[in-house]
Image 1 (spheres, rainbow, N blue to C red):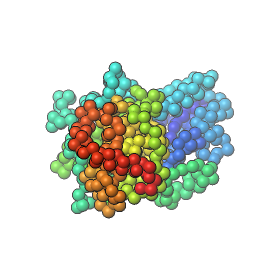
Image 2: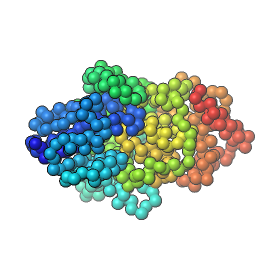
Image 3: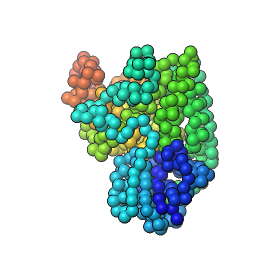
Image 4: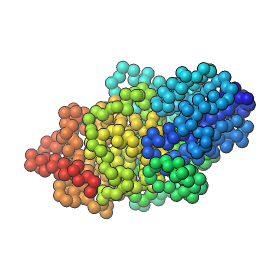
Length: 513
């Protein structure tokens, strides 16, 4: 009989973990599909399917290596429906002396497992997941006693720690420049070809049938016979190599661009395999840097630096902010917003082309890139004054890569400024001018991006000025956004009143737009 039970969560599918170096008859690994995870928010059907398929593939891989695995499918009669209940049941049915688990990345699971262990009368141990570049407490210690955090400070620390793109002295970045953010904000030209995406097609009909049978509520759509996400380490490595060969050369330049030509552009599609720990951020960074070093004649440094900044900055950094600020972060609502999300956030049924495209793409692909999330759906929700809880639930549910530690910091911090500037130096709000500058969405839209007033005026425009006017006392001293008030103050009082009335009309008629 095995003496040790080790839990593996659905986002801990790391075959490189030291747990798996040597099979042992004394150890059994527990993986379970549980209603506590399918039901805490309404998830995209591709998200649940992706996690279940990846977990099953991981369990099969462990068995092939000689490890003992106890896998509970969602409809297994022995499944106690929650992770902690399954732990207690399996332990009660066995003769275990030790229970081990890897540190979870979600606060709720961290607390649940701590509380579970407190009730057990056997030895319990928590080990590191051996995934991230820095420990949980790194950001909290780095910004101790600071009122605001600065990603650039963290980014430079990690670059130096791992010697990513550094000069020989170890403290100076290559070229003497830390980032090329100003070079990474280009609109996508019509004549730039977009590379194909590798296919990982598989049949997910069994999972689809399971979710129907168990009456799991989901959102979005899925081609059950053509589920197309990488789910194994071999597939993830292939996708990483493909990104380096076909997308890295233009990643930085067009990472903020938006188009209806293709959902992926030059993005990597690695977020799901990273967030499930199938790949590690270190190997992703090292692989991309190595490829760049061998192809510097074709790929300039702005491309690889922009990619590293996404991994180190808006992933690793967000995780640090999460652990420094939870659980209070989940209650932040700096602007005291109370509105509901429009119903069409769940259907994409709006005449605003940018929102319709971004939402429908999300419903169809379970994916949108970071600028679609920040400057289309997030921007509009912020301008509209939607409660951050509503925005959190939508983002956490709709995206296949959304796990709370990375979702809530990007949503409450970057997208909704609900933390009052702890994380971001300004609210990321914009009028239709930004959408026209960075996308091809405005072409063919039912609304005119140039107009603030009138039946065909883009709703972003009046809502933008309404937002700025409502929150003037909080924002006019912000050096990155305060200059907008000089523009607002040049408007005649009658024009201001008309714009604010238009914004009020937009809010009252939001479901019809």
